[in-house]
Length: 172
Image (cartoon, rainbow, N blue to C red; front, side, top):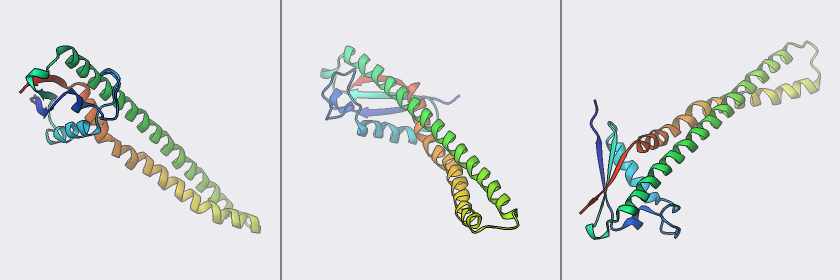
């Protein structure tokens, strides 16, 4: 059994967690990109085990009500981001399959056109245009399936780990 991966982040105040440009309440504020980036960087360094995120804040600023709101907000943010990434991966997979299959079908059509004995000029032009389009669709569709979806996996894995992370506040 893998032990928990401890990640500690020093905060000067609760505002360090949120975007400087967002003045809404703690429930609605946008999380800071820098804050998320730091968590991600530290989590990558500890690839095994459940994340144990400790947010270190000065003892005089601690507020259990704000802390529980922030913990809930963080979990919700990671859950929403994971859902969005899953939907995006699904969309890229569907588009990739559609493009690759369309390319294969057009290749079959191009092959059939090459078998017609008395080619008219119009059929020759259509075939010249069709063949590169077939290859483009096949390779772009396969790229969508493999490379684009694959590039989303690290973000998706990070957010899944953070959904189940134990988040706590500690005084310093």
